[in-house]
Each structure stands twice: as structure tokens, then as C-alpha cells.
Length: 111
Image 1 (cartoon, rainbow, N blue to C red):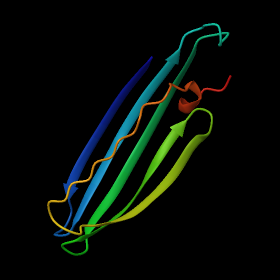
Image 2 (spheres, one colour; image 1 turned 180 degrees about the vertical axis):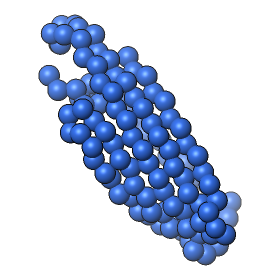
Image 3 (tube, rainbow, N blue to C red; image 1 turned 180 degrees about the horizontal axis):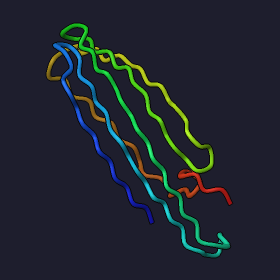
């Protein structure tokens, strides 16, 4: 079982800048079963911020980072950067990702 909560807010800083920031929390619990010898529970927290700078009408620059707190690896910072170039207004893209099997190790459990 998992419990997820996220808070996200956007602020216009200047004419061409906007800041997106937020916090997230996840509690993951696994009950004793044939694979685990005891109950497991983890609290995962994160804070993130990103500056979106509209350099031109078609080019947006993204700079930001995320600080994750995990009980096994402690705190980790992940920087993020990117460019978005709009070729033509009104274009639409579509992406599909097929669901996979649940993986307990994906949330950080070590057995």
C-alpha cells in the first residue's frame, strides 16, 4: 500500500520568468508475506523548484532541481535543465507507455 501527497505552486516572477516549486511525500508499506519476513514501511520526501524562462516566443528554457530524502541513501540532489522549442502553434503530440508489472524494488525496498 502507498500513500502519496504533493503540493505544487507556480509564481510569475518577472515578465519572462515563472517559478514552479513544490513538496511531495510518499509512505510505502509492505505487509509480511511469503517473500518478506516482516512488515516494511518507508517515508519518502522531496522538494523541487524550476525556473521557466521564455527566451523568445518559441523558445523556453527550464532550469531546476529536486532534493529527495530516502531512508537508504539519505538526501540526494538531482539537477534538471531543458529546452522547449515550439515549431508551430497548435501542434499536438501523443505518447503511450504500456503498463508493466509492479516492482517492489522500484520504490527502494531491499530484501
